[in-house]
Length: 220
Image 1 (cartoon, one colour):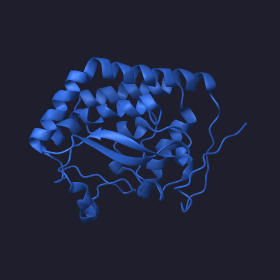
Image 2 (cartoon, rainbow, N blue to C red; image 1 turned 30 degrees about the horizontal axis):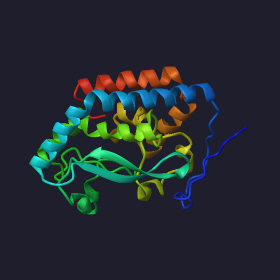
Image 3 (cartoon, one colour; image 1 turned 90 degrees about the vertical axis):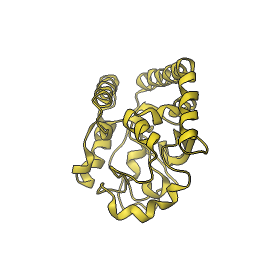
């Protein structure tokens, strides 16, 4: 039986759906168990570290140490994604003033030297410690360890529906590829590549490459 993602936030997308997902119940079940295991491991082992990071963030720039942002997930369902705050309080409002400096050719916004990022935030981003709170998303099932990264609703509106056919993840092909030098179409093809190839070996390969990139200090 074929399944197509339905999304309420992406009805105006100019792209047609081109891909479908083959059901893999055993893979999906084991992957879900793995997500829960990783989340529980993070909570049980890393709580002291989480507290220290939160205190350091507030010391550097006082305010909520967590950053919660609405993202679009599986089937177009929206969910709150949790991260450590790496920018100055209220700096997200300045994003549109910096759009012309965007280093990506797609809807994704990113600057190598973003003036909104705090001193501590730069370290957290470089070490990917800012992503740790997403263990909450893993536990509740809105995200998985490996899958296409979720975009905010305004960005997803310009993207194809069929990249939402699988659950979004902490890392995927985008994170282990220098997408700033790729065309918009090639960037999207990375999401489709994962949708076609998703499986145990693919996930293990991406996990291994992500760890290598992080240890090498590369910006995935």
